Image (cartoon, rainbow, N blue to C red; front, side, top):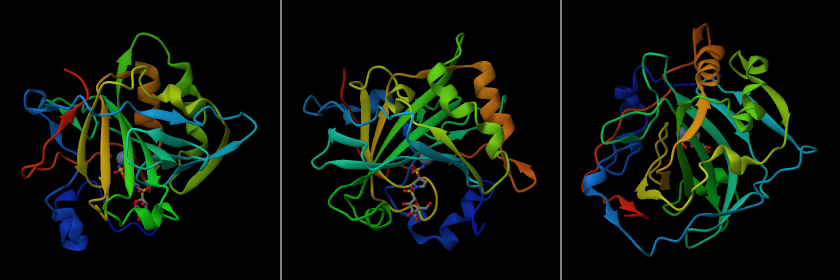
Length: 254
Ligand code: 3J4
Ligand code: ZN
């Protein structure tokens, strides 16, 4: 594909993508002792996330991540000033030795992170919204290791081998995407940031859930070990934490 950036040389992104050196970049380290409790933050309310298994969803290895395209009938209907339409979800991960979440909590990485990307319904498309200050809302969830297999994640992970090569895709049946996120959507962090990949537009209203999603060690290993980017393993696809430059991070809970 026409990729002009790599995770290996993320220090060089700003030389090609000017927004990547801005002062509201993502991800960030969330220092829990410095977050500001905001009792007025509305709970995240999702609509249309329970998809029929008759609708097929495109799952792709785009060389940077594993991405599932989502139907525009999925919305965040509360939690922001406008409605936000889902576009895609994807993952960031590391290796067995290196935990690969993008956001960190008190400087600690989680094994992986899911991002569900939504765009403001006042704009015509994700591409248009991605350039607007109030364009995007991404929901982020930390993925950790538990004893049990997470059946909800099998909806995606069972098709991993079909997209092991870069720029390949497959179709998977719809399922309840809500179940990829933590059970409790009321406890989250909120801040203004950016796309964590070039072109790093500073147009994302970030929600990072406090509660972790658990998958089995075997499921995480499948994500870490199956996909390729070119000839190499697709792994460690996370950007380092960026400076806050005076930004505040709010929490919905005490
Ligand atoms: C846009 C660009 C392409 O980043 S993350 O912050 O959730 N990790 O907006 C679209 C494209 O039009 O050119 O990478 O970003 C995508 S995106 O919003 O779907 N996007 C945000 C891909 C990585 C994700
Ligand atoms: Zn992401």
